[in-house]
Every structure is written in C-alpha cells, then in structure tokens.
Length: 208
Length: 118
Image (cartoon, rainbow over all chains, first blue to last red; front, side, top):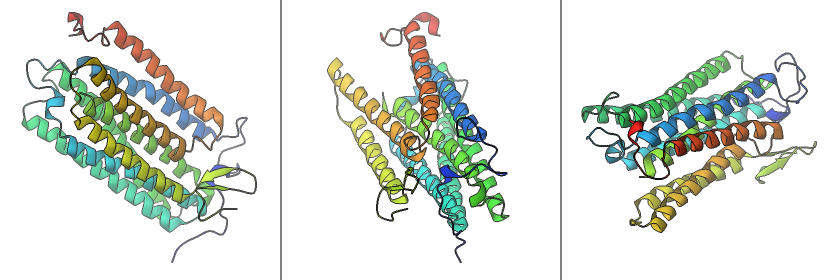
C-alpha cells in the first residue's frame, strides 16, 4: 500500500514550525542556508584540487601520465550512473514533498545504490592504476590525480552514508512530509557531488 | 494546483516548481550532452590553435551547460530564492577567478614548463 499524505505541498513552501527551525529574515531555514554556504565554500576546495591537477598533470617522472591510462568508455559509464543518481535523488525530494513515503524510500535506496556503483567503479579504476605501478607517491601527476578524484570519492561515500541514514530514519517513521527539508538538504549535497564530477569528467578525463 | 502533464506546475500562491516529468526530461538531456561530449573528445581535431580551441572550447561549453542545468533544475536554484543563487554562484565565480589567477602565476596558460612547479 502506498503511504501518501493528503496534503500535496511543495517542499520549498513548508511553513516554519517545530520540525523546520524558526522564521528567518531570508525566509530560508538556517539549515538550508548553511548547506548552500557550505557548498559555496566547497567550490573553493575543489577549485584548488582541480587547479593543482592541471598544474601537475604532465609531471609523471618519466612514466605514463594519468591521461595515457584512462579508460574513457568505462569512466563515461560511471559518469552516466552518477548523473542518473541525481535524477533519482530529485525524485526522492519530489516524493517526500507529496508525502509519498514509500516512493521516497525507493528513490533514496536507488540513489544510494547508484552512488555505490560509482564508487565501485572508482575503486576498480584505482586498482587498475596501482597494478600498472602508478601509486599515490609515483609522481606529482599521480598524487594530484588521486587527491582530486579521491576527495570526490570521499564526498560521494559521505553522501551514501547520509542517504542510508535518511532511509533508516524513514523506515522508523522519523522522515515524513513534515520534515521533508531534511531530504532536500541531503539532495543539495548529492547534486553538488554530481556537478563537481561534471567538472572533473571534462577537465581531468576528456581534455587532453 | 499541480498539473500532471506540464513541466512546470504553479501553486495557487503563484510559486512555480518543476514536475517529475521535467526532471526526467532534464536527465535525458544531460545524458545526451554527456554522449556528445565523449564523441567530441574522440574527433580527430589536429594540432593547430584553432582546432585545439574548438575541441577544448566545445568541451568546456558543454560542461558549463550541464553544470548550470543541474544547479538550476535539480538543485532548484531557478525556482528558489535569489540569495541562494548569489551564495552558490558567488562562491563558484570567486573560486574560478582565484584559481585562474593562481594558474596564470604558474604560467599554465602559456604552455611553458617553469622549473619551480616541480
């Protein structure tokens, strides 16, 4: 049986109350504003990591550069998986806004699964590079590559943990239409992880 | 009021928000752009400045479109309060400006290999 609340209210219009913090001057909850501020600062973090990679990507100490070993077809599929996880995430936010708890759980679980597939692909890619003899300390190029993609992988992993936490809370009845903003805030983080990968995929993998 | 068929529904209060159908269409568009990006990178562009500018410029343009689409539609920036767009794009523009300046300092854009880089 589908658990659907009777009030189809948009998640962005949830009135302030005990579960949504208090009324603010901006009309945006403190939690949501904090997440956006955090994401703005994350732009600086990943900007630094991408710049460092660009600076060092040809410094492979006489060995092959990361670009010579990329499997673009494989990474393209990983990128597609992460892109689709953004769709399932936004469908979870949409479902909780409608009060459809069952659909919310389904989409949250699907998003976590797609994120896990992406991380598995990254672990496979790293293992392949390590088997070729290119570890973290091989050269500046490889250090910069592992630092950038590894940091992104850690962010995806944290996102998966947040999604599974939301799923567990939902199963215990603690995530409902009344506190739908929690799903939206985790969704913002997840979409940010996706947009960072959009940058990494083009700048690091596709541009030679 | 929420429409089952329209891409953007409008509530009685006049606040518009995208529907699930629009999210699916957006995801399909993003997948198509990604496929074009990959195909673009495999094209035989040659060595000249114009060819490299077309290759890299095209890839960066498609990347920027994907970025803005995800931020606007999936992250709801297009439909949310403007202060959030200022916060996010402000951080982004600041980051791009700071790191372009840093890369220029290291002569990244001239294609030279200064010995002090490492």
